Image 1 (cartoon, rainbow, N blue to C red):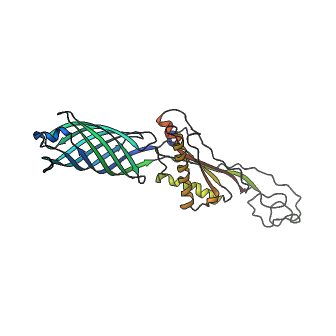
Image 2: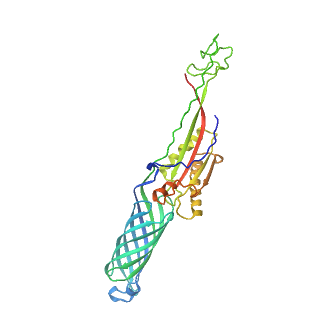
Image 3: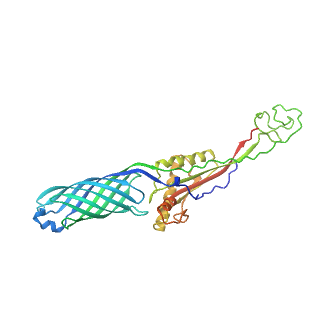
Length: 350
C-alpha cells in the first residue's frame, strides 16, 4: 500500500445540512437571589418599612438560537420589615428576553415582573448575567438586575446565583465522504501455452505463482494482478458559540475517522481547529486550539489511536470559510476539519 501525502483541507460547506440547528432545546434553572429594596421604602409605614429580601425560585428558558432566549421565572421572597423586627413573605413572576453576546458567556436581559408582597405592583427590569459552563448540559449562572416599579416609582436592585440544566436534542448533519475507487486495468501478457496447471493463461515453466484462483487476472509471471485505488475520508465537526464541547451526536463522525486510521495503519493526520471572526484574535486562537485538542483527545482516549499519528493545531480566525458578518457565517466558521487520503491495493477480477 503506497501512502500519499496527507493534508487537512478547510472544505467549503455550501449545504445548509452542515449548519448547526437547535430543536426544541430548553434550560430549567433553580436559583436564590438577594433583593435590596429602595431606601425610600425603609422609612414608609405604608410599605411596612420594607428592607431587603431573600428569594428562592425556578426559571424555564427556551433557547431560540445562538443569540436569543426567552424565559419565565417564579420566586418566593422573605422580606425584612419593621426595621428588621419582623418578616413578610411575597412572590414574584415574570418573563425576560435574553440576548447572548457573541463568543462570550456574558448575556443581557430585559423583562416585566409582577410583585406581590406588602403591596402588589408591576415592574420593568434590566440586567446582565454570566454562565459558568460545567458540561454540555449543566451550568452555573449569576446575574445582577435593576427593577423599576412602574406603579409607585421605586427602584430595587438584586443579585442572583443559580444552577441550570439543558434538555432537548441538538441535531447535526454529519459530513461523510465516501471512498472513490479508480481501477487501473493492466492487461495480462499472453504467453504461448504449453502446460498451464492453474489455467491462468501463463505456462507452468514461467509461472511464479502457482494455483492462482481462476477468477482473478494475473500478470506475465502468473501472479495476481492488483490495481491501486484511492481512498479518503473527511471530518467536519461544528461547534456552538464560544464552546469547545463536542456534541454526543458527532462522536460517530470521529469514530469513522478512527476506523479509517485503524484500517490504513500507515496514515497520520493533522486536526485543524477554527473559530469565527468576532472577538479578540488571541482568544479565538486559543479557542480554536481547544477545539482541535478536544477531537484529538477523543481519538486517543476513546478510540485508541496512537498519539504519534495525530497532531492538532488551532488557526483561530485566519482561515474563514465566509467573511460575511452574519450569524450563518459565524456558524460556518466554528469548526474542526481533517482529511486523510491514501491508496490501497485491490485484486483485479476477470
